[in-house]
Length: 420
Image (cartoon, rainbow, N blue to C red; front, top):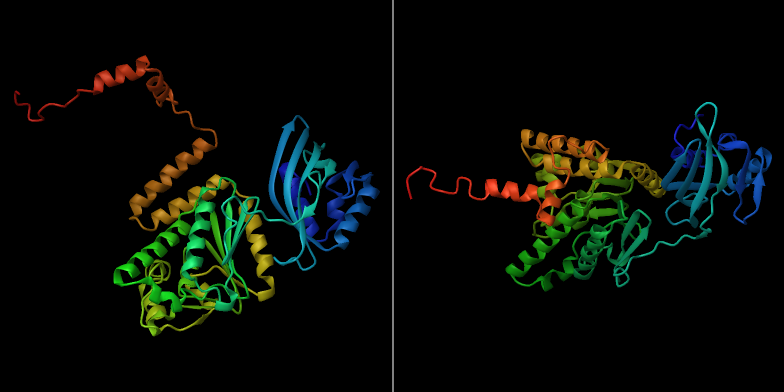
């Protein structure tokens, strides 16, 4: 296996560890390479490196590569990588560690790259700790966590199947604002505590919503919250276990991806309470699965198995219940490996384009292609200013004065040509 890009070394390392491929791991290192162990001891040479790696694999780790960066000078690359490692079955609740590695790699005669020095715990291993940013500590009915580029929201009212109380709804809206304003978060995962996702709005509190106008105000608030979720410039994933009904299902429809367990159940049972959905159950649903199926789901109010949501295009994947965490981690790893600007553009043009006619949507595609070219280096256009117009305005330069002199009074008189 030839690694043509030094940034791919760490991703290959994670894949080989997860596959328990000892020989493949050893081949990532030069024969005289040095691997620094978790205790700081240095193992140099192929046999010593093999022994260290064998001890690592004995712990049955699962590694997720979070980010990778390389500075290349000639045939030498200095790299920094962020990673997360869990042990045992590797589900989301298992114990684990996280860290930042430092490596030096060298280009080989075949053009590939191999490790010369690998210090996987240069930032010191620490017990897994997901830190909430400032402003997130006051949540009572949900949990907000950040782990580098990954944010997690966990609805936490298991005694009520995570039904959306007025307080929980306010907390969720505030958490989405934190995610919206973050420059570091790239992926958001929403899940529920207690083997259920969300049973929708808390019906027992609806009497506190007030009169008809108060209900409209409450529903519009929910709509703003769903719109905030849908329009985040991050990739959003709903991890569904147990029930996702009513407002819970509406949350999933505002997300970009939905992974569910085999035992998950979904539906819009509002009709049997004598009410109608307010923030996606008819609107987003009809856009996702068509008006005929949206009528079936809403007018009948049945609860459906997860597999049917996939068949209808409402959700993406169904996995065995014990594999939800594993599948979620794999999806996050794939998403974080992408060009994040490309993901942001793709999400934007797909969401905007589906609401527009074909030619307008194609306009979004064309502009996105131009932006992609600019971001990738082709930003200088011969007959564009390259910001000289802005600079001239700021400095009251000649370019600005000349343009304004030509345009200020141009065609400002009577368009009929009549004398004033």
